[in-house]
Amino acid sequence: MEKFRNLPVVKKLGFNRIILFGVLVLMYVIFAILSPTFLKYARILSALNYAYFLGFLALGVTFAIATGGIDFSVGPVMFCAALISGQMLTKMGLPLPVCLIVSILVGTMFGAFNGFMVAFVGIPPFITSMAGMMIAKGVGSVFTRTQSVSWPQASQANGWYRMLVKYRLNGTQIPTGLIILLLVAVICGIVLNKTKAGRYILCLGSNKEAVRLSGVNVKKWEMLAYLICGTLAGIAAIFYVGAYTTVQPGLGDTFNNEAIASCVMGGTSMAGGLASVGGTIIGTMIIALLQEGIMALGFQKDYQYVITGIIVLIAVYADIRSRKRKN
Image 1 (cartoon, one colour):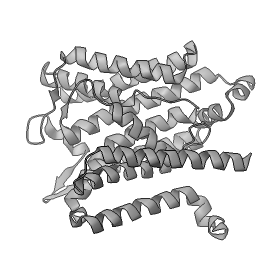
Image 2 (cartoon, rainbow, N blue to C red):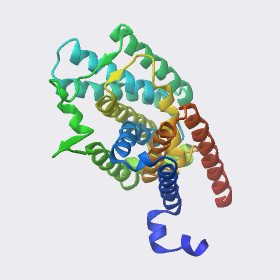
Image 3 (cartoon, one colour):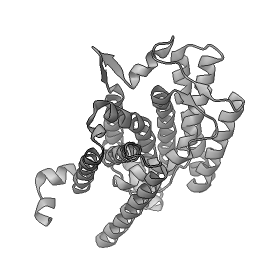
Image 4 (cartoon, rainbow, N blue to C red):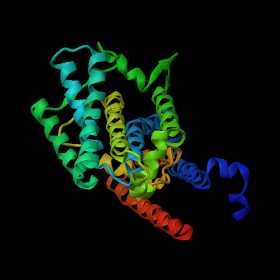
């Protein structure tokens, strides 16, 4: 095993990411054996529908966790953005491009709120994001008067936004959402690992006080992490409605946990200072595949929560053991 770890290609790709990808492939093989319908292209597209919006949420949470913080509001913020922009589209008659921009702006505003409260006011991230979660639920419900919002179907006017998720070409559905998600993931990886902003964000998670004493404006970079998190939640809203159409107020809590689980099992440390965008994407695919597999086998979604919880515990335990070995 040690020889395998030291191979140049393994070092470049990351041992943990290779193992995680192996788990993803193994899960797919097991589900395909237990349920032959899993081999159908339609079933794969259905799993990807879940992965798109969850992937954007998980990428955003990766930045927040990298600072040593957390954001429990991303799910309700996504729903709030989808409700507000959907209401503007279906009830107020605003142009679709404007509504899509509004969705992103709503997420960005919540990200700015969380970042300001954590970085400048000094409220702990856990409390701030819990408050943001409740505010997002309330704002979405008040704006729509507690009514659900249904976005246009592909065949209706303004339905072209669904091409962001799936594009039909000669009768075959192309998963354009996967292409966009991977492109955004590449951008996030470059920002986090190749730019000054990303290095400071990671350093905050490693030793915030040392970064501050070195003369770095830690408040600015910490707020930026939450700003990115909120913006990606606004983008996630577009892909959610592109896949599932109807949005109900007061929901979204479970997606917080799944987004965080995707990050943690992907190699992002809950203690901060260590993040893996590639691992987050693979973790997202595992969650999406697990959700689709549970449905294909005829079990209730509750089983997914149990399995996801166990996976998260194992991932966190592995992270703790790894840090102890390094120390």
